[in-house]
View: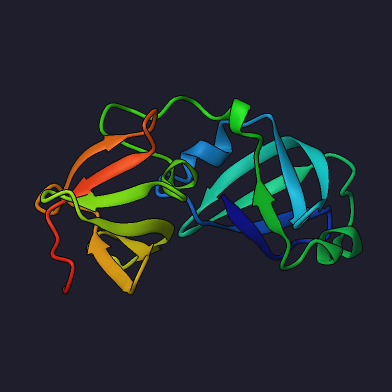
Length: 159
């Protein structure tokens, strides 16, 4: 959902670079997980403020600049159960990773290995016989069926 960029001030506040499309998603959460990989700690969020392209946050137990500095560069995540359900025709990236991608002719192109944000739109990174970079827009992506684990695309095998 984001990362701790730097300490802010001397009272334990941190500057946060949000990764999510809507930074308000982080603002509305009562606690964050901060760390890397499996080494994460839970912090109740005492306060969050908008700060241009970043957020400023005060986490419980982080009460001085040194404690805030120790969090610098760590990733911020939240439990999936804490997230609201996505809106209609919207998806969490984590739900798309691993889905099988087939074109409209029924040919399997591979599985979603990840997504990239390009500024204009998101792009599916599909690994199969070869790598396909498919814009995640209605012109190319048809049905996304999370229950079946499939995404239908209008994309040629040799594109």
